[in-house]
Each structure stands twice: as structure tokens, then as C-alpha cells.
Image (tube, rainbow over all chains, first blue to last red; front, side):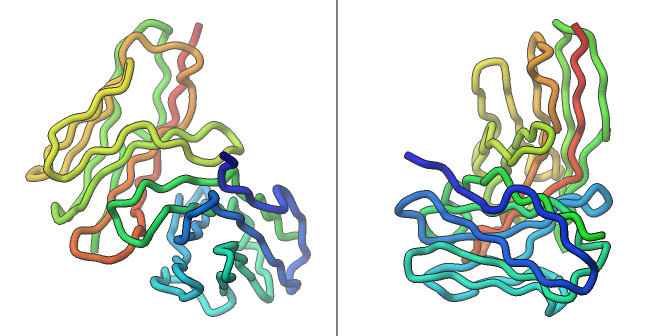
Amino acid sequence: KAGVTQTPRYLIKTRGQQVTLSCSPISGHRSVSWYQQTPGQGLQFLFEYFSETQRNKGNFPGRFSGRQFSNSRSEMNVSTLELGDSALYLCASSLNLGPGNTIYFGEGSWLTVV
Amino acid sequence: KQEVTQIPAALSVPEGENLVLNCSFTDSAIYNLQWFRQDPGKGLTSLLLIQSSQREQTSGRLNASLDKSSGRSTLYIAASQPGDSATYLCAVSLLGSNTGKLIFGQGTTLQVKP
């Protein structure tokens, strides 16, 4: 059974550009969440999707957005990139919504903003 | 607001030593607590999950304990090996919420020297 797949794994963008990151959850999983990891702030929750609806959102500016498709695949978008957006973006999936579900993480997408 | 703290931030030990990693959280209203391992540049791998009603969980050389009343958890690693070198993160999920959101500590980076 394939794990959580994130693409691309590495990318470099210029300030002001936008970026889209993709996440394919484990087959059958309907809940997808995103986290940002930086050396200074650690792992911070971005948002969570279930059945194509955003269920929870972290404390990030509106430049960060996401969506989930009917096949549970998810994308996150960051517009008007800033240097501080350089981070490892991790996607995680679980079978259903709620804290009782085992969560599985992908390998992450490394974003560097120059 | 739930906050999770891990001490120490970094730890270096000789191979074979038993060691303890600490995690504390400010709000005892948690659903569960998990310990994750992260290798450099990689995603997170779940090591142990302790439900709020449990006191400890064991997997091989790893033992995690939970004292909800004092807001503390420890991860005990027996007979450490160089392959245990990684960053260890603890995370809590919130009680009474229909979300899988995890709140992470900053992690402890462990180096086991041969």
C-alpha cells in the first residue's frame, strides 16, 4: 500500500512568485492536513481537509490556501512568496476526521524562496 | 492555548547508553500523545501513541510514559544505537475537538556516537 506522496520534493522559487504543492493521501484516506516546518517555529499546523471541505485552519496569512479534490488528493498554494516561506511542507493523511485516527506523514516538499 | 515543550533540544550520547527524552504540555485536556521520529530531510514516522487514559506504551527498545495530570511524557530509549540518531518530536491532539490537528514540540535532536 503506497504511503502519502508529495510532489514536488524540492523546488526553488523567487520572492513574489506563487507555488502549488500536491499531496496524494494513502488510498482510502479521506482526511488530509498540512504542516509547515521551519528551524525557528518548528512544526505548525496549516489546515485540514475532509470531504473536500476545509475543517480547520492554522494561524497563517491568507496567502496560504488549499483545497481537496473528490479523490481526496489535496493541493496547497502559497501566493506572493516571501523569504520566510522557505520551509519543509508536510502533508499527512488519516482515514477519517478526528483525533482518534492514526495519522501518516509524507516525505515533504522542500521550498526555498530566494 | 496548548503549548508543547521538549527538553533538551539536543543530546549526544555514546552507543549503548539508556536515555530519556522529555516532553511537557500546558493543558491536560488531550486526546492522545504521540512520539515521532524524523530523519534529516525526511517526513515523520510515528513511534508510539499513548491514549489519554493510558500510562505507557512500549515498542521494542522504546517506552513512552504519560502523566496527564502533571502534563508530562517521557520517551525512554534502551541500549541506544547509532541508527537511533534522529530528531524526536512529541505531539498532542486536542480533547473535545473533531480535528486531527497535532500540536508539536520543537523536538530533541539525538546523536548516538559509535
